[in-house]
Length: 205
Image (cartoon, rainbow, N blue to C red):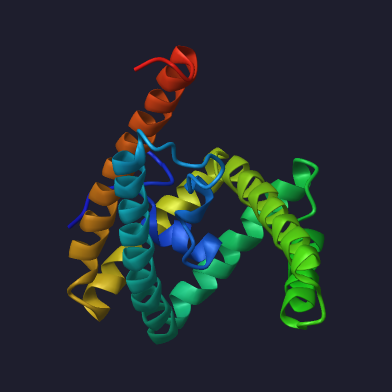
């Protein structure tokens, strides 16, 4: 049985998937900075790890979906947790409902096929911004002690039920945690390398 220690977005695979619909890694994507020619190898490794994370996330999201469908009481518990998280977000001055509505509207615009490529880019950027703000507000709300207790309880039951639903789940979760650690270490190295190269300037090396 997997042990879950302190609440962290890394350990709480089940909850991360519940909250983000399976996109638990995308917000850390190193898309902001173009890989430099010198750091090409490292950036390639980062991208490979990212792809691996997305693949594992998708597999776990599918197992989780099947598990929740097979266990209605888990679905109720999840909905209660999400409602609690939303409440905390509202208390902190966020409006999660209007955020989700805005994301939905923007996605509809994007899928409507009537936008120019430039407009599509702007709308995509807006969606990303709105999603990032929503995720940050969610993460903030999840730091609350009462929410952490709810998360811990649901996560343990969820992981247990997922393992019963699919014996591979536990192995996939362990794999995902390991890959996330490797990904974070690579990201750190990439950022350090970039920082060092900026200090050296174009002629350094």
